[in-house]
Amino acid sequence: MAQNSTQKPTYQGGCHCGSVRFEINGTINDTVMCHCNLCRKLHGHVSSYARFDRQDLELVRDDGLRWYRLSEKTDRGFCKECGTGLFWRPVRTEHMAVMPGTLDQTGGIRTAGQIFCADKGDYYPLDPAIRQLDQS
View (cartoon, helix red, strand yellow):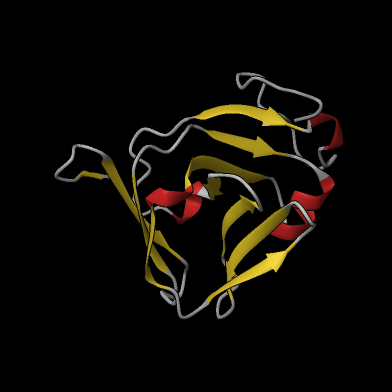
């Protein structure tokens, strides 16, 4: 994480193969882990999302970026070349979320909570030190 001229934090990140590179020029909220069946199916395990203002996203390279309309309410952004999951966005809001594992540096982002804990897989334990909710 770096500071830009207006003193907003700047986060850089991208996919594994480099076909998608981005900057987020603003604050990123602490991350929330999701244990729901859908997220585990999409990501192969627990997913993690950190919310930010949509206007703060700058796509530096987007050759590989594709959006998957998950439902009438949400989209998932991923790299079509390497398959890296990058973003989650509600269709009609000013916010979206980045998967913090795609950031080059996390700059103090912490895990604030776990959601859909009642749906978690039986092959792993929950971290009792992180706040748990059975729903979102």
